[in-house]
Length: 195
Image (cartoon, rainbow, N blue to C red; front, side, top):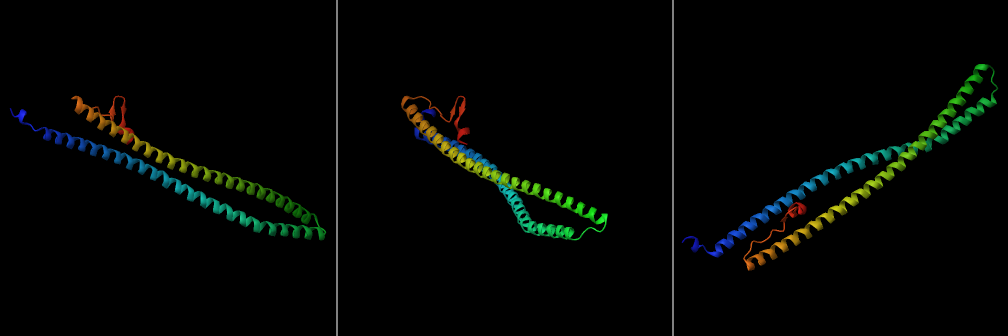
C-alpha cells in the first residue's frame, strides 16, 4: 500500500538528482583529464623554452666568435705579411734563421687552414640551429592547432551525446521504455573521448 502512495514527482526528483550527480561526476572527470593534458603540455612547453634559451646562448657564442674572427683575421694577415716581408728583406745569415722562418710559414699555413675549417663548421652549426629553431616553432604551432581542434571536437561530441540522451529520455518517457545512454555505447565510451 505504501508503494502505491509514492508520488511520481518524488521519483522524478530522485532521477533528476541522480542524473545531475552523474553529469557532475562526468564534468569532474573531464576537468581532471583536461588538467592532466594541460600539465603535460605545460611541461613540454617549459622544456622547449629551455632548449630555445640554450640554443639562443649557443648562437650568441657563435656570433661573438665570428665577430672576433672578423677582427682578428685582418690583424693576423697584416702580422704574417710583416713577418714575411721582414724575412724576405733580411737575408738569412745562417741556416737556423732560414729553418725557423720555414717552420713559421708552415705553422701559419696550418693555423690558417684550421681557422677556415672552424669557420666553416661554425657556419654549418649556425645554419643547423636556425633550421632546428624553425622546426621547433612549427611543431609548437601544430601542437597548439591540434589542441584547439581536440577541444572543439570534444565539445561537439559532448553536445551530440547530450542531445541524443535528452531525445532518448523523452522518447523513453513517451513509450514507457528505458532511455539509452549515448555516452556509454557498447564498444565506445564517449565520456573517455570527451575527456
